[in-house]
Image (tube, rainbow, N blue to C red; front, side, top):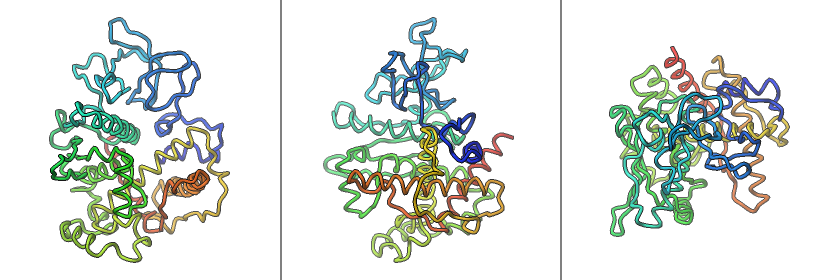
Length: 385
């Protein structure tokens, strides 16, 4: 993400600024070769009727030309022959492409599935379609951030990740969304807007989305990959707390006593107060919210510098590491996020909707967000060596 801000902030985020290279991977603005705007889930251009596919290694939607064999495709500028993910024609409607020579039939995102719901049920079909859409957005962002994405199902059983999409049976027990040793379980009924809203209200949550669940749970997974048994473990404990404290006791205390009255002074959400692991996962999810939203805004030419509003910018004294080489870029990120959140919330209110982002960033939260960016940047540096 630091590269994105180095690419655009010197030009004050003007609409004419062109994102290129790694920075462009954070944009959600796509165009067909005919010039027609495209969107992340599109499979066909409505203007020129070209078949479309998402290229996960480039992070873009591309128009396709038929290859020499049935079911094979070319993209202009690439020599590699491609094929569709097998889930393109399924309920999931996957538009991701893969190497035609690969013996695998599913793309990098769909290969992460260990269990999907019973598709004989029409509700499950609807739920799975929504779930896969959110999951593809998650995975595309992780790839753009150059984080490891390997299937625990049949690629990396030790350090990979996989998903179980389950539905609670009528007589119970209730399926709980969560993470354990690289397995992320999602209750598919979270894809039902009405049911999710009822849960959000019952639990007094200001925000609850399907994509938010994915980003939170993947945060737990990356704690295992990026923090555990690394040089970052002790700094994590100093900033977030000691994860060796009893999770069961923390959970019991949270539901019996609730969060501390002054939780907003140090945490991004009340749930983050429960345990250091949850603080990390909540902060990770919000970092991903910021990166994806700002990347989308920049891709569509939004001039964040001209965004009016009484936003007091954060300075280096709020940071975890004020002298870090990317500290300036991170400050650009977090202050741009504050400005765009102000705009998003006012737009929502103009439509009679609740705030898109009902959270307030405190200085301790900003420090945690920078810590996460530093951990990711360090991982990228080590893997590029």
